[in-house]
View: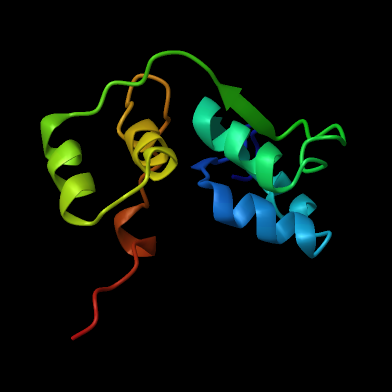
Length: 113
């Protein structure tokens, strides 16, 4: 993202936050603006109380009602996803605030043959 102050947006589930904190490596996410649903935030605090004690300017708590699309709800049931996983996946579908970046055609990853 040369030439801009914007960081790519990422969405996290509880596991990566907990395990990166255990490794004292949460700062690895600092190149991103990491969106964390309220439920995921609470789960991470429950299992790793100190995870948000430091000022992590890159972790953004997304509070409020999150509605699941019917397709996502079906997928969640089929895969036995927990509520935190469902919220994290739902956040990735909120195109209103997620700024999707597209690759220039010449830089796009090539699918395996």
